Image (cartoon, rainbow, N blue to C red; front, side, top):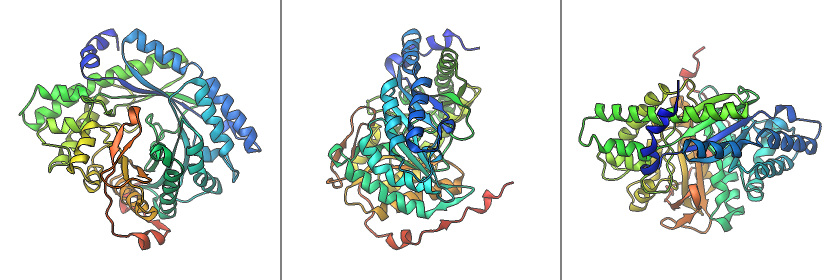
Length: 449
């Protein structure tokens, strides 16, 4: 049983180590909202989200006060919107979702999504074409596209198109440091119960509604490692496991309380270490606590592999249902240690790609020069998708070609999205490679049934 004793043991984490519940995310199935025309569908979508999520923010704030635990974000994830339309313009649904998000007072709403790992329907194509305008005209809506999976391979037509979409999105939101791209993620092996934005959506295997909680706590892990300085790595791993257990235990409590009060089933706890730009809340600083001078130094990938594995092992013992992404995030703009490493030149795009082989997601919140070509962005997406496909793991790309900026400049997003140095991109062309289109076949180990 979980009781308040579990909370009391975490008070120091909250006061001194930036521990928080990063998000309570309500998943909502919208398939029943589909109708004969997109305008009617949009009306139903608004009503469904506004009614189902009307008490989400209030409940989160009540739990914050009663338990003394910061709950940073309250979010909603919905059924991939491409499943609700035919070939119509999905803009009315996008605007309805953004309006509903404002009505209920949440921070973000995810699910403006298309699943295209094996091919694209006309609805998928319509949604993808609309993404740049949608992310320009909405404030709280987030978008994602799945372009690859271990079972299906890589849809290179979708990869090629997403390079163009990201460039157009950057151009449309150039007056905001291309902020629209920060709300757009391209996935391989996307999961259906991820509570973290911008990639959250409510998958077809999910119930009508579910409460999913994402915990955090890089600062807590770093502080714990300070107590075992110079100890061997098996001690380091055990320390991280014990800390992850405590962090996840709190997430389990918050998830169950929110579920009970809202009358909505508890889904999963995502035990990912999600950093913020605040000093003392950095995944990169966990790596330096293990003995690296700076993130990106030789040994960084091995240190991250240890961290990711130990977090999963500790967290899975603390909750009946662990899911989502779970592990360690390495978003550049949202992690002060990553920002400093990138500014110093210790952390490059190529090193980040290597690190994604062993972390929870992929290339996250990375700013690149505004003149980076669509083909180069597609090539980066293809590389990351290949890592996910071959290793049977989730990978993703959230990349911001900052219009008007060059390598060494800086982009500012504010809040949890932070700021980032603009990182250089390999200048050699992959245009002919991307132009081929078609599908990269799935690996042999996908045939497991």
